[in-house]
Image 1 (cartoon, helix red, strand yellow):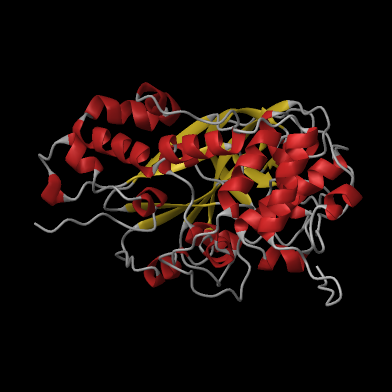
Image 2 (tube, each protein chain N blue to C red):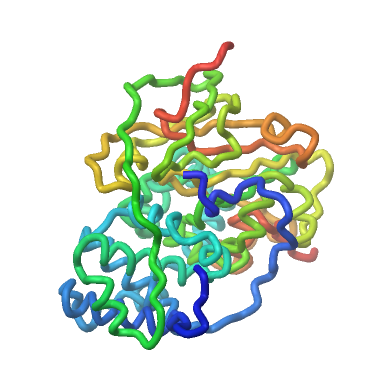
Length: 203
Length: 200
């Protein structure tokens, strides 16, 4: 989905808050542990977890600290997976308990089309309504395969609790000038791209 | 999230406590899980792991070659662990001509068992939005002014393999023992936001 989480290349942001000022939020390690427990217990998988974060209301997403986003995702998935009802959850807190928005349909991978190192590839011009790990800034753009990584479950299916076939991801190298002509610093941008997101480009 | 003045949002601490109750009552979460998990995370998943790999790579060319070929195997050789979904660790070697920097624009993925939990600045929306497009400017703002002849490579952690940067060894440290070398390797350098400097 073209959600607010897809931040790469968006403009108008400011200086990075660096080095990080110290902060001590005692609930953050708790959230990390709760999320890890639910994942280990297979209440959800990593892609479902990521997609729950992506489904947060944009205004909430942008203002919530990192671990509050995790917290919202864990709570949302516990409700969606029928571990607890929304009413039971809300009864446990003295205030509102914002959850992620509803989930839509996922999708299965394309028929396998393997690529080799050195191949010129184009990222398909797809607008996926559900979970997808293609950052918007590479959509429709052309790059070169420079590496192949092990097989992973196809996130667009896994993120929706569907049986997810495994497929390779490719390390695809883009030139920043091809991604944002006339409006970027010169660099090489490497992105890990699932096979189904790619098609062969003219050599 | 539209905030309703009549019904303000519970604090994150209150909401986290509620989720803990739910997982204990309905998810069979053992009472000691949170404390045990947190202790393990804080003891085992530390920046010092990656720092020890870097130091060894500087003194042991055979290890360096293995680490560049298969970072996960090299880390496992040193006894470090990975969560199930981190199936691949790609080690990116900095040179005088190439500077690598890591980001996760879609969330904030990191090789946290190897370089430690991601620092807040790495999770900052400003970093995620800008470093892919304005790498040189962002690094300069963060105090790293790279020579114009240095090519910048930005790595976006969009799949489930993880990255770490192998920083250049500061010349003044050549000949140091491995333990002492590990002590100068910072998390920021293994993300690519800094280069290591030691005065002669």
